[in-house]
Image 1: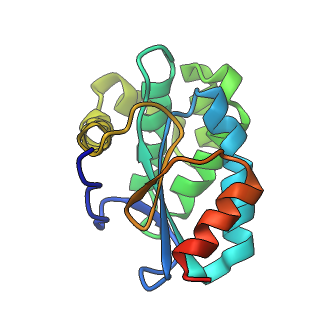
Image 2 (image 1 turned 60 degrees about the vertical axis):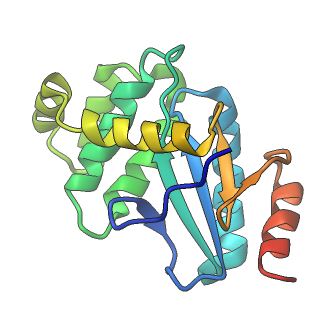
Length: 177
């Protein structure tokens, strides 16, 4: 397996760079398993607070026809806010609505977040954020990602279940607990 790409300012992060553990997720907004993992990751972040830095990278799978546009919508949201708050709000909204991720839903979610739906539609049509999504996808493939969700804890592939207790234990181990 190849090495995980380093975290850069282009990544979507939640938590301080100084956190003892970094949890990188490669995810697909239309993937049912990613949808199940999303509340687990949220609960882990609440549990660990500033001791955990989350990183999300797009990995839309070909079998999910709306995943690419959903990832581009998240990137659009990120471009509207330098604090990454809009990205994480869109990220959460996409998972909550993952069974209905057509463009109509994406524009509604953008409107709900105070974003310009017409600008999102334009960005999706022009594929404005497709290169960023492809960059994430390529970095995942180079790191050996084979499906979603796919996690790395401090740069090491996490091979356990995506349930709270098992991930909590793995993150604790990453902190040297």
